[in-house]
Image 1 (cartoon, rainbow, N blue to C red):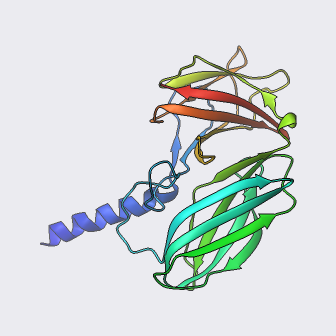
Image 2 (image 1 turned 120 degrees about the vertical axis):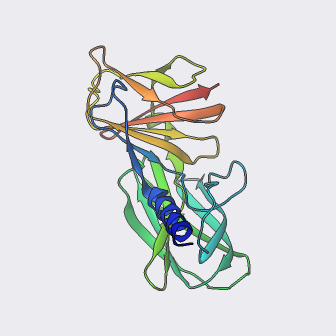
Image 3 (image 1 turned 90 degrees about the vertical axis):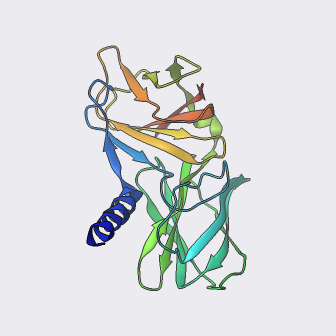
Amino acid sequence: MKRIILIASLLLSLHASSQNAIFNGGNGDGFAINGYAEIAGNIFNGGNGDGWATAVNMINLPVHFTYFKANAIGSAVLLQWQTSSEQDADRFEIERSEDGMHFNYLSRITATGAGNVATTYEYTDKSPFPGDNYYRLKQVDHNGTYVYTPIKLVSMDKFQVHTLVVYPQPAKDIVTVKLPPGVDGKNVVMNIINSGGALEKQLMSTSARSDNTLLLPLGHLAKGIYFLHLHSGNKVYVSPLVVD
């Protein structure tokens, strides 16, 4: 009996630690120091294509999300989310980033704590960044514990976005990214965005190969159409990415 309890405890610990895990890339992947983050991993259960993780949590969460959306409305960005139940929830903190990696606090909305009642919230960002804007919610409980939602992307002023060369396509396990002139591969952030506007995967590079290209491992992306956003300084380069 003690052995069974010990194994169950270890499984719980392993599951919890994967929530914000960072995985280092393998040798020869083109990245000197790269942090590989499963952005949409292990937060909430959700429907197909909504960007929520499909991992089964072993604890009861105080808030269950139905959806989290972010859309451009003219020159502003409208954030909308809905919860199906709330227990001991204190607030939602809205965070924004230009590169999907470094987030800053934007605003907060108090949770209603309405129990098993569907509740809808919204917030308007009236001054988004030119180019890419990444949003996430930090749901905070009364006791201070918190979880993050998956990240949503909204691109403003699309004419400021530059094209990017990525091959081969359709892709399978890995693609080559041709760096634009003037981009040397140092401190480059690459984000893979799914068709629903959610950040699927993220890679950061500190060096490029001799031919000024980077190798981007795709991991276990499902077949479909994605968009690769490469951030270098204040410039954003974008390419469609078809995974077969």
